Image (tube, rainbow, N blue to C red; front, side, top):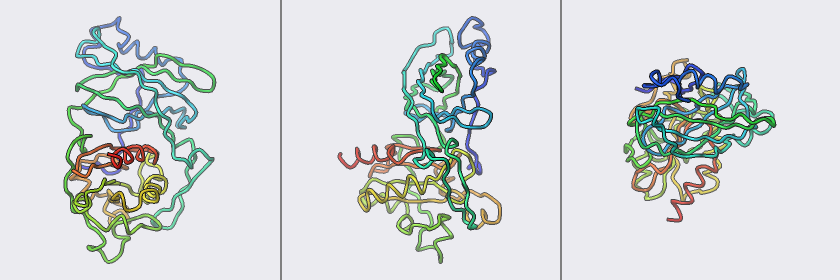
Length: 320
């Protein structure tokens, strides 16, 4: 089921708990120890992407202070797996998180146009997350210990736990995607029926996903809604990510844009997922998938993202 407009954002607060921790009061991963690790920290840590699953994951976190996102930090995350026994916790990887921000968010404000003609003004600091790429080899409880440098101060050992799913609802990296046959320009009288961007790009609606895969090129599938973005983490993905990709690669890469919501209903105030979003198991928006010509997922991006993240993947696919 597609949860309309929902982006799973969780604050990792002091009361975070996980199975088995209650039996290990002296563990640095007990609820009390987790609470103490963030007691003197003047911000909260928020996960800005869906619950991770076994395999490769792009995990994004945000730092927030009284609702404002903090954009000038550096973050190192150490990832731990508990194996059902917190006293046997083992360090898996240390990752220096990348700062991901829409280029225009580094200025004071940017705007995007809504389908009804209004302009939504975004403040720059609301578009910053910190991304680490993690290979999570087992389902269950994991922990992250983060060191954050912010405003000349260093905060070490901020701990939180999170649950890793056996499988994600959306296609995983390495999985074969559905050969979807969404509506294209051939199926509508006006492009506004399937694209809320102002102006829309017809090139993104000429082929179904199945037809794009049949071209033998890398395919970028963008589940993005310019007019009906529902969360603070969605950002202007069409303007700042997809269009620059199109301008850079032209016809060497296939780009397919799918509105995750039925636009006729959305314009009446009701957010209903389109069949393709349900077929792909999406629980959030925006999502951008980079597909190999054989239909497997090379990479996937959710929430705030930068075009250069996708460029790196596409360049590797095209060079191979």
